[in-house]
Image (cartoon, rainbow, N blue to C red; front, side, top):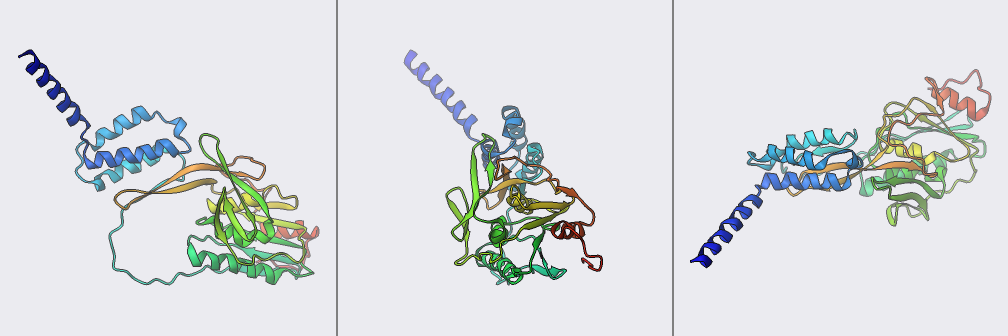
Length: 320
């Protein structure tokens, strides 16, 4: 009898433990999202995860579908307080439609017949489109690389970000080979990013490669970078890529303040968590993570950039 009672107690306790551990699908989904955040968020050290997870999972107890969890994830994004992470909900399946990818135009011109100007817009595509974009930038550089060219103005004032690698590869002839920056995670581990042998890379991984990356015929003496309030994310990464070069100076306004790196995590239902996992640093390992101030605050940055390159601004020149 005593053995039977003991056996019943063990079965009851086991059943209670089993029932307690049987979370609903929405709860499991939310728990997994929080684990990703806890393990990878750049601000993970600033959060009491035990308390936050306990209070957050309670909100999921009455939820019946994963879609009902989405607003809770939005709340968690706010708790991360990094200003760059975001959540992409599962999209309904649509019939396959062939879309034509448009490559943004790279504005290129000469000021005073001897100062090259390139306006590099935001870009958020990959694959063949990314290669075409990078190649287009290099073609513009090649066309402006003349004996009479005294310097370069790179306008990033409206570059709101996207995919940094085609932007970086396109401008690589001006930035040069070697390490241009780093990504630092919350544990202070870092991975370098740079350009060598026709390719841009991060750590040991090649991100994008052109078969014959252009090499400047005339080594430039000065490069002016123009920044603005709309310069953000990958646009800020390109600003950082020029940091530390001896003949570079930046003009304009302070950037948007998203100089951090994001990683996309694919979730089980097709939604995506775009999580800020690193802070950008320049070639000298100076950390950013927030707004980047130009060397010269200016509300007429093109004019002051050309003045700096030429030392004396021609009075007849109109800079549009």
